[in-house]
Length: 316
Image 1: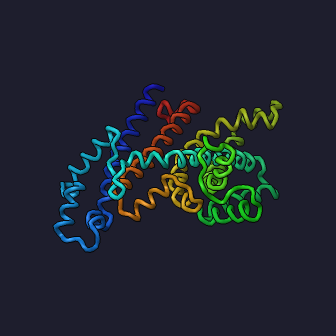
Image 2: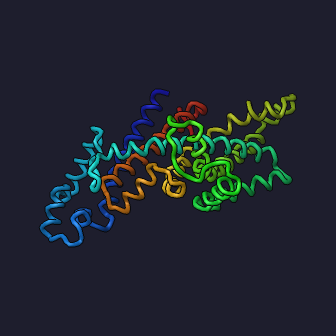
Image 3: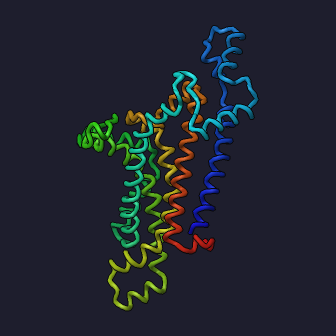
């Protein structure tokens, strides 16, 4: 297990390094000159050139990347072009809001995915199966912003059970903070739970058809015990892999959801930074998002390795 952990950690570090190169190259490929934008539309070429020297944009790209990477390794993500505040402090402001949102969305996705997946595997025919299939299809097909609007109309306007938007820090008012989290977290969780439920249902159906399950049925093992202690543990590894991949769906959908629900998180900060051509802030936010995804994927792999010994031995 230790060897597997070390190998997985080395892979994660390599992915982060390559991602940093890709992010840096992508940012430099975006049209627009931050120096010209900051200098103003009436600035002279000499003023723009001086601004470029001040920002370090006149240096070779390799040197710029190395300076940025060295700063990142020392906890310095640079300073914003426009607010001149450290990027680390700007990221920290939205990290608590985005972290709480992503955590609750992931929890809801797991709970809904398990419930719908198990129910879909058990109810293989009839009205229940059609209903569950319809819920999964709608959750996958409807865009996130449409889901958000529907949730606001249903649960904030027509049935005013939750606020339509806004962020309340947990320490200031825990009850209201959780209420403000429900709708945006549910909006992010629905498509992820649908994918998780589909994979879990297919895995359970396959496991329930195995010979050892049929033999247990002949021995008189009850359906509930057979499902929870026999089939579900063997179907979980595939679902855990899907969950790790779908965590990116939660991170990617944060921009739309945070904008829709007026949530002051990293997604809305990234959108504002893109509008301002604040390249340093964009780099920091993208690197943090990729890092979060890599960490979540690594944790899911470790959980799957703990559940499935074949993965630790490289057999899967």
